[in-house]
Length: 627
Image 1 (cartoon, rainbow, N blue to C red):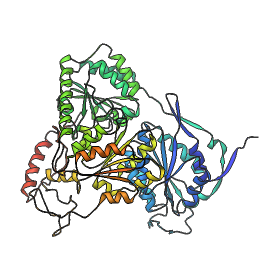
Image 2: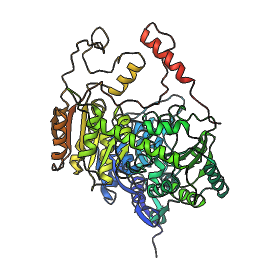
Image 3: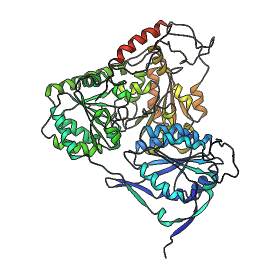
Image 4: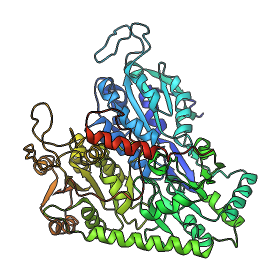
């Protein structure tokens, strides 16, 4: 007679359940959970920790920072096109709340991660326990309630049998193309260790099929008519193109119709950089090619984009008085943005069906030639910036060029925050759909090295190049140790700007002279030195020595040629390698006919701020509602 129930602790039941969850799309079946990151404390050691020890089928990975392990899990899921992910477990209190930033990043970027924070005692009799937040109006509140705002699904398991219904809902959200993000299952430390007779059916292999939903037929026909009636259409390719694995479908659609493409941060790589109708990055961090076409576009076809303010240049990018939008998106919420004609469906199948309706139609040849000319002009601009030899320190643009030209073209570049994402968005030449990995929905400082680890875990056959500034490196470099422990080699290009380069540039643009953005000794309550040439004393921080102390192989570079040699030699190093290079703080890649709304003080005694406010007020007049 078949066993109908299995007596297990809540934690053991959870681990056994996770091992047996699979996903399938297009006939490809994969185990959904590739492992579990964890840092143990009294809130999860005897529960989840014991279960992971007893059931090694779910691979355990030791991390150094709870926020970092969530970043790594999200990066892993992104690299796997959301078809696989990792779980993350922490102890209660600070261990749990350390994961909140990572949860926010995963949810904002629509990436599935499962968070399993320990929680306070459900039985309450020993309260307040170590690290418990007390609230005089309820005994139900714990710090884990803070996850509610940044999770797509949240639950607390106060009784062992609640796990059954909670995990089915968790899997529904995690495997949904439209609703995925961080899922938080709070686990009181006593409940983790309590036993229950679970139904054996709960642990059977379960396959969650990821659908390719198709849009409404009438909406599709109307979209085809709108496209045929347009004179200057433009595609905005977002991350949904890559998650849907629609890059080849997009290329065929563009070849067929002649509609040019601008790429968001998440969508970069949707077309190879050298496709003649790829205009490159669009928006605040965009190219002049994409931004000029966007300015006069009468129809914008958004594919898998949520239209952040960087993509729309704070609603100033699209200036045609009669511009209309067609949005292809699995999420109804995003498909309706900008009063668009919504095509709620999978990017790949929607493009295929739209292409069939547009058979024989293409843009005016003059418009196509204009787009191709702008593409060629932009490539010459990239060549110019790659070839710059700034003195005495290399500029960031030429450092990006060195990595792009001398790194492995089948590799992956990883970045997240500071001035690097904007320059990479403009200048990186993507040779394949996974060549460019940017976390820019949250642009979280500290993501870079942890995210690089997640990418390498998802694609160990590829070289992974993590580009990170000194500010972000100092916030979170701990997963260098994890990468070495697990044998996942990263090549980290550590660019030292001696401060916060990005926000320093923004501060100067707002008339604030880079205040508070340099790593120098303070004087009189503020950081001395401005662009007038005052002498400053930099802090005696040795980042190269720090990387060595964490176990990395280190190259120190003084010149561009040193960097090129280091990139070549790094390929022969078997462990994580840090290439340290000092860069010119003030030499930047230009902005190309775009603007970002950052409010300037309306009143000030500083003439520089007054001038910046005047410019701000003029630019605000260009912002639009799309109705």
